[in-house]
Length: 143
Image 1: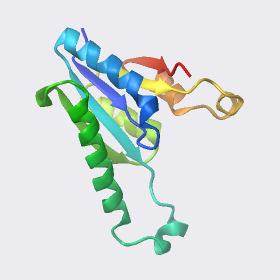
Image 2: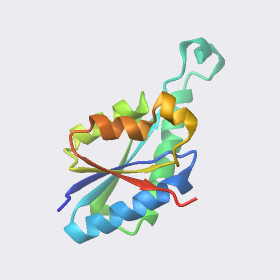
Image 3: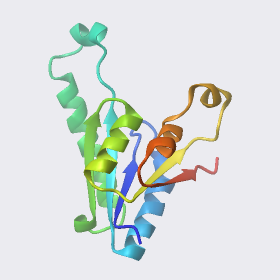
Image 4: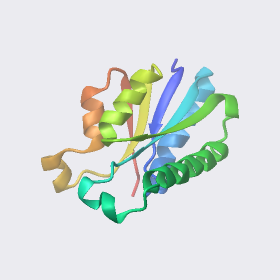
């Protein structure tokens, strides 16, 4: 069924990502597929660049890679079927670029319950659903 499943993970709210990761793992097991976790780091605004250490972005990347490595190790798939990557830039743009790079046939992502602000501004999940070239499964958090 699905061979390459991409799961965006917000490391600031890993509880939100848990249902999506669990769903992706179940689907990968059923089809013998792989799961790729992705975290997108925002770019440091130019006006703040002089106030952060020169290696700030490298430190952030290492910290994110370590956190994704822990999540990948705890997801229940063997190492041959789970991987992770940290990218920098706009969230939905980088998720779509990674999906294209790995030839993903499914993106599984969590979403908050809609709020008034997301109706006017749009959400990352909404952008991914609209512009993805593959299927997208949005898993709602029950709370």
